[in-house]
Image (cartoon, rainbow, N blue to C red; front, top):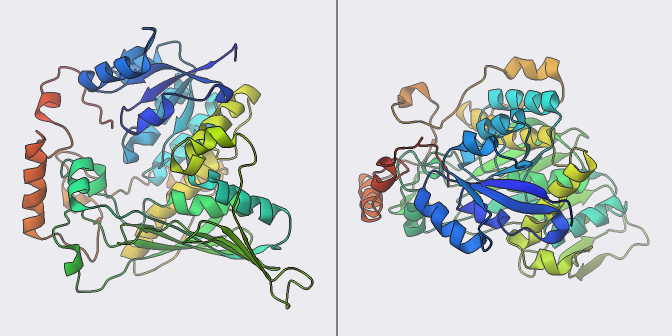
Length: 430
């Protein structure tokens, strides 16, 4: 394309996904920001053959450059602050999950998008695997009728050694995240397939007494989180997320005329009908999903092709100057159910209403709701809600984690001795 959208990527970990965008997305890498100069030096070698890539250790300085958009791949619980700064600097924003870590952040983020008119999109990739896109096509055809119930799961177990590596330090977000919070991969699937929104939330966690199977796991998180949502059309959706010991990423729809799902073993699409509500329709069929377009590019991308599509739709939204489907209101809705579900867990299963993110009168009620389990250095844990209710790491687990961090030159706070000695602002980034 002759008129590229110049993007600046924040974070050199997950951010690498966005550093070689396909030409058809209209995006072009122009800048990278990370607080670690040694990481930026590696990125220059890998992604800057012409020597034109701008690199920054100061996020505010990057926002002063001539980039058009920012891609946020920094820490999970820090996206909203970075997004708001970018929007107010006149940049479009593609934000990794989660969009917000407090309800107050959601209010501020929605206001910033509305006031600036800039494009905002959450980089939620799970709705855009070929299986989920096919489920949406089947649902949109009317074959299943209207959704009554949906299920989606995102369970991602990780070995202790990997956890120590990817979560270096007591205050790293991965060591503080409650089991309901990493919920967007699950709920986004059903929201996109059936075009529905959550309006009320209940949360639950397993509270079995014997957790010896977790051995020397340090991450202070319950085994997993279960969220039950009432949706705006009256349907009920159940999501499962967290560190359950078996990987799972299913999606399932039950409608008034039939049902469909992504089969766990094969990844095929399976569609069911019964003689009660699907008269004259095939009772069962199973088949492999195909990409609607750009199959080769999507197949080569990460997360089942979803990483390609979020960039494609982000570029399309900017070119058309129209907010994307995964806009700020849906981003805040899918992110906030994790927060509200955790409130529900801590209140014994009490339901909580989801803010109406596109309604200033309703969301104003939450503008000072800074409730968060995430601690920063110097915080008193007593001033924050707990991050787990059933899981308490063994002292030996803490010692094992600290030994692993020290072996990799980490101080246990989320950064290394080398980083601490740097003279620039210590903005937490991947």
